[in-house]
Image 1 (cartoon, rainbow, N blue to C red):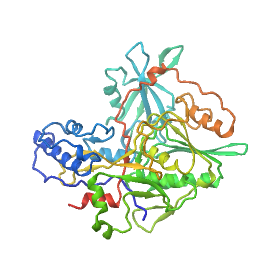
Image 2: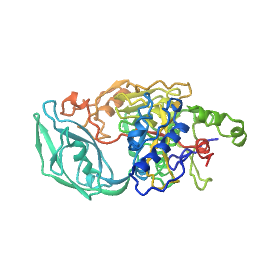
Image 3: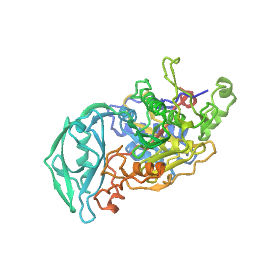
Image 4: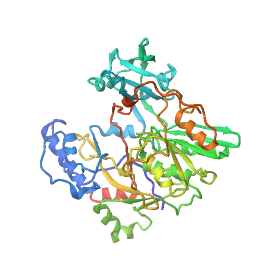
Length: 485
């Protein structure tokens, strides 16, 4: 039976009884939260047998959590606000400035930091102002970004203030010239659609579908499945236009819901049937013993927590009778071109890994992150004073050939540096141009390189927590988590 994988409202298990604490940030509250963390990690963590023994601690939970993380684990994370991370994973941003960007050193000879705009978001003041991919930012609220202050300076892009002043710069002959500052209004509660761009290019006998897909989520948290259905509609348009080739742009896709990954892969696999395995799953011993128990098998004979098959329908949670046929184009494709970046991760890699046994996947761009494990979001529903939430690694996934060895990332077939001189969707943009040239046999215009020191670019600075998540929730894991409640 196809599992309905929805990922956010997961309940915590083995919760310690609620204590009457007057202060959320008190040592007593930290002690409670840390014990709650250890209990839950003992139950669900993929490396739970290697956890340290519990010792009472009044450390801040973010500090204590790090002491529990296995040396192989690069991805488990903890958050001070459950509501905030839940919304972000649904693509709901509390205060949206209207564009994504990446930070790096201005030059090796100084300590200044600049930002390049990756793309602007639809229906935001930033896009209306004409801000675009490749624009260079040097000052925010009239403060020059440096290696020392950049985290503080860029925080004003996402704080609760209604607007922010941004100074863009031209770069000519290795000299920056600052422009007049621009006031950018923010959007409260912005819902970002993961389908950023879908279009079709015609080159003689070739019709090439191009899809920019920026994260995996079903909907903005309202259980409408609107984003999966929107993705399905985009693929349906490709099918209607009889595309011969497909380019999927995942260069800025850090991951997301496993359910959306299964639905997306189901749109692309050749000869779609529900008896084809998309992925196999490996859990810790607690999960494994429970799922193998006679009681679980007798009570849930149609559940197989150890594998996920491709889907032929997208099912709405309520009413359950609402099913939408998957628009599949796999039989029209001889191969798929994936555009990747150094942030391509998790659910993106799961789709690539899951499709590899069925048709050639050609990668253009940069090496991916290398996340072959999955998480689940856990919060404390019995103690409202505990606002912390965390996402531990709870599984490792494999494709139908039991392949999962890409912890160093998928290396591209064609390494191409990201090209900021062309907009996404421009056929002369570096990564897309390379894919088109491989499909058509005709080289596109050479992409211009961004005029920034390349070695500094390769040392790009983090400006926010990058949530490289593959998030899983299904009936079987819910049953395990809730069985002691």
